[in-house]
Length: 302
Length: 262
Image 1: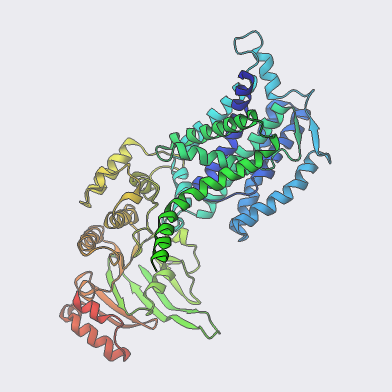
Image 2: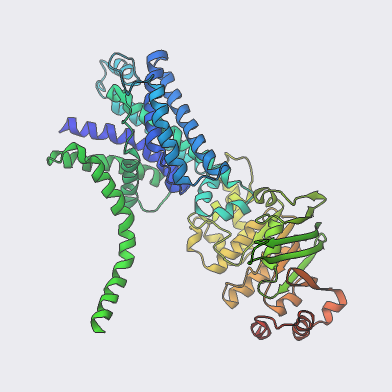
């Protein structure tokens, strides 16, 4: 059980970075960024290749940089070329499949078993301390705390406020002499960086990266974000950020429980899709249901 | 000084739906001048504001603000010197953000990476108390929870916290209930006079049009058909305005019934 729990926490924390990325793009900017899956894989691929050649520390930086570049491209398509935000995401995501294989030098899989990663580095540092063996949780936790702290500061600065207002009331932002296009670009760059970092950490903790590592991650992260929202619907920014991380952990916990109850592992994507759809449609159905009942009664009377 | 020179804007040109929005219109707004604008629906009032604000770009003609040609400037750049309020109280504020956060965006004090400080909050509180709408006690409330009148008063404060060169008011009290509308109008007059702002205000209320500001213009089919100020304006009455409109354009005001009632 403790093994199961620690893997829940590890995966939950690593995915939480993607959830935080979606917090910026989906919640704050109100953009559904469909390039998330490809960007996650890009982070894993770049992270792996750089870790092999230049060591683990640089690999994190390189992954974040690649993700930011990916966010930049998606946002430029949306703002400078007038491409619809969904279409821009789909196009970038498709293109990233080729880019990712190219990054992995033509192969669809890279093995990191014998490569020094941030986790193996931490593991050596932790030998003979009470925390020995917890390297994955520790590295992931530190990264998540840093990301939450960064977003909690950034989204309260004037730039962050401008970002939030862009998703909230586009017209008002323009009237406040802020360029909403520039805000979208900044937001998607940040969210791309976080997504790729998440992919990089997952690849290094699994000691391998394949071309499908990111497939479905958008839905999983969206489900986590929405679960977090159910439990922390309102409140201060920090509460919502921590709520998103908690949502990620909770999602992984529910999923692990389902696995324990003999749900086959391949059901993950069906489950996450269902959670996303339920979380979005339930509030809508709640408003529609009373009306439906009234219509039914009226028809029966007539 | 805001100067419009021979501005023309035609919608859907060369189609059956072609419609003249603004027709060779020239207008000079001097510093500190408060102009009220009246005209029936479709006379070009909102188009005029959209052209000045940059939401629309004119087909021909030039717009100068303090000598700079701003005809083609992006709206987000223009809004540094042009403040704007809309009829919809929801348009000027971000509903999910707090009153203080909305004001901080408008106030633009400090750099991009500065957060709201205690002195900022003090400043906001002092500014909001001038509105006398109890907003100074709602700094941390999401704006979405405020009433329409409060939201519009806040929008007005946001548009004027850094005094703009020109303030555009597009029927900004029309969607409010009569008492908060009157209140917002009163605040408007106070702010515009105390900051000595150049201001253009569209209204459907003839009495307000004559009472507020120092100059009144009437638009019809994209042209200025009446421009009164000083003595002539002081002697004008609501009924004379309506009469004048009829004689010039040869048709009834769409909603003069409503205007006469006010």
